[in-house]
Length: 74
Image (cartoon, rainbow, N blue to C red; front, side, top):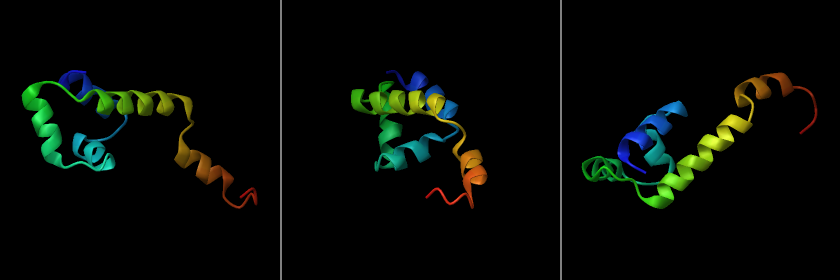
């Protein structure tokens, strides 16, 4: 995955690149290197693709939490 595609996908999740890299447990220097190389590591790209797919399958979780509070279904 090239860096431009990475940036667009992270943005589509409503995240900043620094937030995504922190989510992965990496330093912000990692995405700086990716930008300079114009290439994102394969496993990072796979993880991002998976998150994008999951995001399209799940409903808005904040809305779900608001609707399920007090329902006793915990």
